[in-house]
Length: 452
Image (cartoon, rainbow, N blue to C red; front, side, top):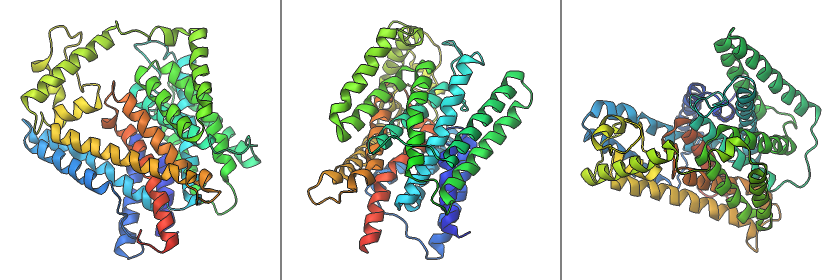
């Protein structure tokens, strides 16, 4: 196997397990990075240059400066190791600079999304994760992480379906793949329900999913084709939507609606009524998991309000370098308002406030710069299909850029009420999807003989 194929296989396996295991995802990222570095040293690859280089560098440098000025620099620098995850953006850009690679890697992403949503639903109906204090979280450590990743995959699937020409007909290989996934989930559920071999069963399932993702990307035959990705995306929409409803996570509901609306506006504005109809249908059915959460008077909502007030006080106190990465939990009691329901807060449940309070206002500017550039470039790539000189196939080929725009919009909307940018699982998924517009541009430049 060549280094290039090994790198692609690692990225595809990562895409499949980003929904189910942070350890496996980071391990596969290391494998992908090592393969990419080996190719760079051998002169067989070029490091991709993107408009995100400036804001990424500024964000990372200011975070490290903030850690150095923290009241506990050692702890803050350890917390700052999450910055290493940004290398995924560049490895993915290099790996996904072809139509086949993108389609197959994103097919692996949908497969992982089905696994996450499937276990979330099973946890609610079978394993007793059916209350506000015990919410289904799939394979991940927290229901916020699970709902955040599910939100992104549902938006990604909607973008894929926006270019589907016809309803996909599953082939035999597709059926075998889905049966294997269902069988794996059934065995895993049995292990968790009985408590016999649950940890081993989970590890084997993650391993199988990683191998399936790698196989999807590296297969030399005609399978998986575009129909496979469309089929999995079509299954992700209803199952993922159900999982989101059962998660009772309001920020993910808001983010999903904004992300889906973004995809609809860019691709087919007339379909917006379908989104509105779905919302009205849920409100008409009045499921308790939804109606009980449509309130601003619960302790969670009140706590967020007082967290934000404390966050503003933190920013006023240290506006330049902030409290330091990872320091919010330890300093929060000093800034906590007496009316706050909870005595502690690991973070401030808002991306902008968290970054400003933790790393200072300059770092907030750099983060907003990063998001603005990523969304602007996704918009430009998405709109190439509408240009007068565009190739007739451009509409179909640019759907990953639409997906990136929709996912980023969803993350921003959900991030008003949750610090999802600091969630490693969500961040790695976002970086993978944010690479897509740049991979499209890199492919175009390589085809034209221009610098990549």
